[in-house]
Length: 117
Length: 113
Image (tube, helix red, strand yellow):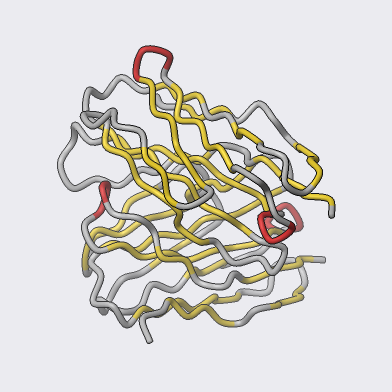
């Protein structure tokens, strides 16, 4: 069985502060895929990033960065200099990769980020 | 424009009255799936489909049915809705299954009284 834990239910920061959203996962697969999705107040779900289990390079995209550490089974998401538009619920998700063609996606419970102006 | 279209956006119904939530994608994706979102529980997978006529259960399939007769459509059927199926539902598609990101519809908020 696989599991994704987002222990932070809600976080509030003041605009321009940095914030890190934690994601810890469990899986028995040696190959797997990790994702982050954003759900703004309007309700749609938007894909942010994917990371393969065999690629531990961290990634930076503008103010967003992701830190993938297999040793601690974590895939954390940092927003630098937060803005009000970053206010949303963020979901971490895991898809196992060892079995062929099967797509069982497990989501965390989400972290609601509120950026206060 | 590439998109996943769900209908309706809002639906209020009564216990036991059969309903269907439609989902259609125009990206020629093979994989489609349904999720429900509940406070404190995140998104949970209901059913998924790897191709036409190929479907399988996710984590919470009880009380739901799906069909995949055409590649672009993946309707969610509630034969006899109950109040515990009141939720926000999302349909999603992806091009290459497990390693591809999900493209989500805009969601359907269902209330069963």
